[in-house]
Length: 169
Image 1 (cartoon, rainbow, N blue to C red):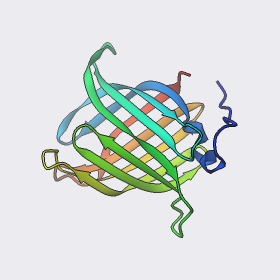
Image 2: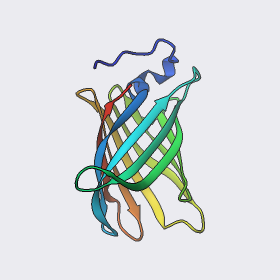
Image 3: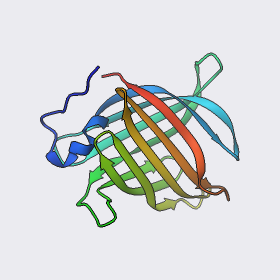
């Protein structure tokens, strides 16, 4: 399915327009502190006419047959275009997690690619230690591909999760 720009989308969102829609697919999660596993994911990225995108992602563990085992991560937030800074930053991603984290990412969006790094991570006193992340999103052959590196639990910034999702709406 080809991507068509929503004509109701504010012009500021043009570099992020390809994210809008409902996506589903699978990926791999792993880290030195956890066993590697396959997961399923659904993302809904929407707008209401204002110059930001709403984001809701949920994931679940998959067994060897690809069947859902149990919920994993959930995140909700907003993509916000911002005036381009000297370092090329032109987008922010604000995310909250029910596990006690709030993340603020800053980065660069261009058609079909976004790269972001955490500008700040806040966590509840009861949440696991987590200090930084780097995310990349891309629109590749009509699919949403993304990867995240993470620094947590005393580990350096390193690969944590990646997935490939297909547009379902």
